Image 1 (cartoon, one colour):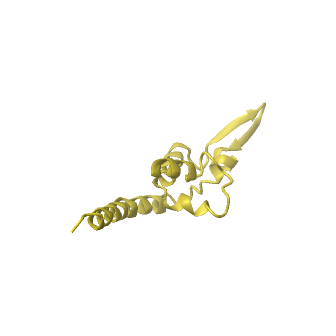
Image 2 (spheres, one colour):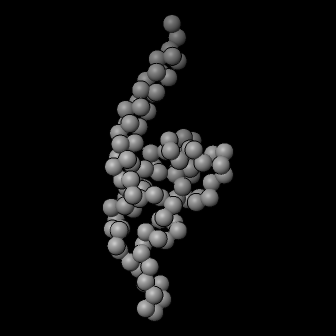
Image 3 (tube, one colour):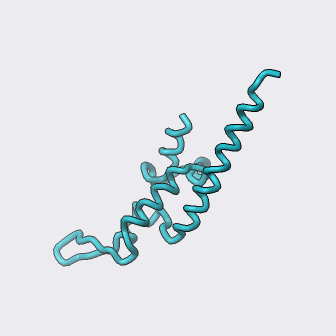
Length: 100
């Protein structure tokens, strides 16, 4: 259930999240992984052709623009915090769930 929630809240399946659950994407590791993947795949100046002689930068495409690709090192830092933080939370949950 948690993985499904993280995937849905990661903001690449749904771009216009309701405000009461929009904060979930910031605790979703899949949001940061996908943002890094797209940032590495498409450089700043890469363009695509969407008509005869019409070009647009890929980072100006609405589905990619909402990912905020300018802060890739922040995404790496967030993933490192999650690497440790989620393990600590799981450890504490397991310790508290043990009978005495």
